[in-house]
Image 1 (cartoon, helix red, strand yellow):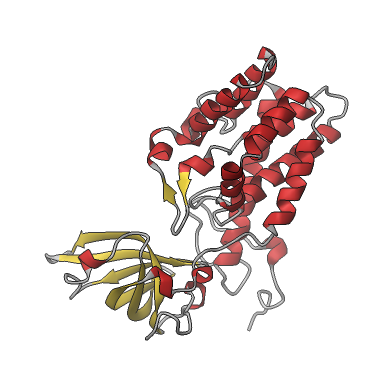
Image 2: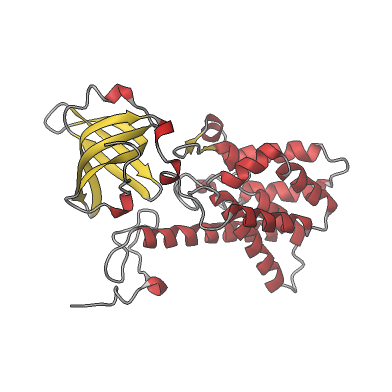
Length: 331
């Protein structure tokens, strides 16, 4: 079978189906068998999802010929295990990246990146605080920053984990912050500070993640994390702006350092200002809405419940407003 032949997508696989198609290698390891010896376990992916694959025999010669982030042609059969499809592999071989259609392997935002960027830039222009506006312009007008920000996922897996996901999430959070400022009109919230905090809260992810093929962490990402990275980078940019107010700097960096809310989730500080508290809760809300929505839509099952228990939410998920007439059908 040629790499350019019809692609079989992970989301379409059914139990008992013969599979002969190209996938991206996300993870690769040898595991011990219960009765001795080892077997090959892979996680393969395309733009529709990921699938666990096991190759029980005759993998030794192929094992050293491909690595994580390589494309491979596999032959095997789809089998159901613990209510999820897995692949039992019969053969595997590396495929030249130049021979495949990359659009088959990279999920992208359903929203147009150019339109989102224009809206994002418009929000920067709306900031009245000249220091915060200059800071944001100095960062996002750099071509190397803008290009990465437009294409980066917001996370490896948890939420908005697709190309342009970071821009989609950041823009959504900024707009949510504006609605909160409007709703609590009797509270003197700092609108410009809210916008700047939202627009910079995940900026460090362009350095934390690598996403040319599969999504993974850079060395800098693993050792420092995006919160520390962006705090360092933002401070560097502030130092270039003459007269940047120390109070504005202090509050903005506090929002960045506390936006994960609690120490257990990697936040160096807990929110201690109204703006920081709002940013934390809205960031968490936007991420969880995306995660639950994608869990429901990507784990299709007949009936009113998603196919299986969500590990992230540690519960079964009811489709609610996403229930279709077919889901309501009962024999």
